[in-house]
Length: 283
Ligand code: PDD
Image (cartoon, helix red, strand yellow):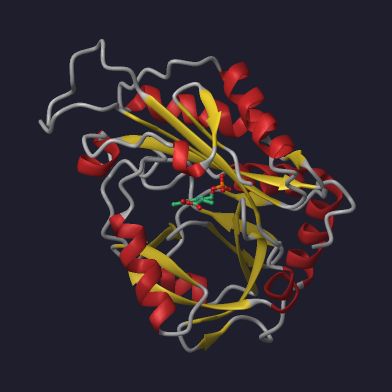
């Protein structure tokens, strides 16, 4: 039996009290996080919950719990649902209020909903690598906020999916920003390139973990813009996210990256990443 969290309590699915007037439905007016679970343990949960509060602050949304409380709720969901490998999904919306664009009265509380699911790691793709498709980045200019408004990402992911690609590599005026739900990295002459932290990307937690690994492994990093044209000329390419981890990219559109196999630096980062997560996570 799956247990969900809503309105300050744990409940079965049929006990969820979701309103038609939830501002998440009307406006995508809310923020969310996805936290990975390995071997029954939440990975980088503090960083994710702290980013949830940052996103909420950026849209002037007040979360009626402390960071510590949300961490404990996440742990409880993992334990109650006996999750071994999977993730937590948590979202906060601006509450239940009749439809009007401006914020509801401040007495209307934000609604926190969360659940945990068992989901295997994409180990086949992590080992073999994937193909991605370049798509224009038509999203809004506050991609630093992990908002529920995801239409730009949804449309890009769907277009990539329909073409048989694993992910979309988004570009704005020819500059690579990030993926539909991932951060993009290219490697040229031993240097790891990725978009700087600006309003045009989400500063991924996995991105930050990988940049930390580059430092540990003494791999030079350049957090400067690069173009789609430059991306095609990289020696290696990969993307990161909570669920994709460190995912090698073999082709962008019809263009092969390097020799068309996962690159050596990418593999060394994968190895280092595997050492950071609980070791028995082989599913
Ligand atoms: N997506 N960029 C975007 C636009 C994202 O939606 C995500 C995460 C990332 C990677 O962030 P992180 O490493 O913190 O997961 C980058 C999540 C997994 C999702 O929407 O399912």
